[in-house]
Length: 327
Image (tube, rainbow, N blue to C red):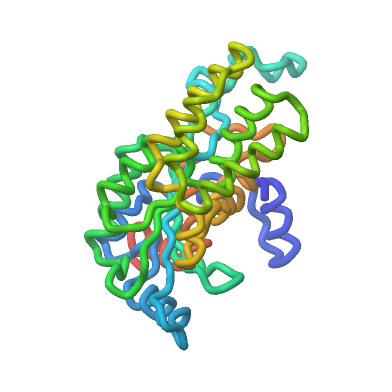
C-alpha cells in the first residue's frame, strides 16, 4: 500500500503515530544495499535455506514415481521512473500553485526470476528475485544461487521457461544446460496468429491454419511447420514480414516447442508462474496509479517484496537490527 495509507493503518492498529516520510525513510534504510549476493554471504539470505527448499521438494515428491518438476521462470517487467532532474524541490515552489511536472518519465525493465515446484494443479513457490538490472546482473544472481547449492538439481527435474527474449535463454543455457527448455506456448501462438491474420485476414481459414500449425508443433513436427512457412506465398508485404519473423523465431527455438512431449513429461507449457510473480511482486506495488520510482527506490522495494514472498522478511529486519542497533 502507499506510504500514507500505511501510516494511517499503523496508527489505527497500534496507536503509534508515525509520519509517512518516516516510514519511507525506514523502508529505505532497511533495504539499503540489500542484494541476493551480499545478504547470502552474511548468512542472512533473501532466499529460503537449503533445508527449507529440500523439505518443500520432499513434500511435493511424496508418493510420486518421478522426480518433481522445478521450474525456473525468467522475465522482465517495466517500471515507470522519473529522470534524476526531478529530485528535490524547486526554489520557492511552495509559493506557487501546483503545476504539471515538466519532465517525462521513462520505463526501466525489472528483470527477475522465480523458482517454483509443480504439484498437480498448483504451484509451490520456492524463491524469487527481481531488480532493475542488466541481464548480466540477473545472471550473477542466478550463479550465486547455484553456487550456494540452493537448487537440488539431483532430486528434481529442472525446467527453464520463458518467452523469446535472447537474454533469458543465454542465462538459462549457461547456468543450467541440462534443464528442459520450454518456449512459452502462448507467446509462440501470438507469432502464428500474426501470420494467419496478415495472410488470410479475419477469416475462418486463419483460425484453421493456426490450429493445424499448433497441432503440428504439439506433435513435435517443427520441421514441417518451418517448411510450410517457407512455401507460403505472401499475399502482402505485411504477410511476408510476419511469415519471415515467425520462421526466424521458430527456427531459433525449435528444440523448445515439442509441447506434446513436454506435456507428457509433466512440464509446464505456459509462463504463468513468472508472470504472476511479476504481477504480485512488481506491478501491484510499483505500478500504482500515478506512481513513479527512482531506480534505487524501486530496487529497495522489490528486494523487500521478494523477501516477503520468499518467507524471509523477518531475516531482513534482523539484519537491520544487527547492523544499526547492535541487537
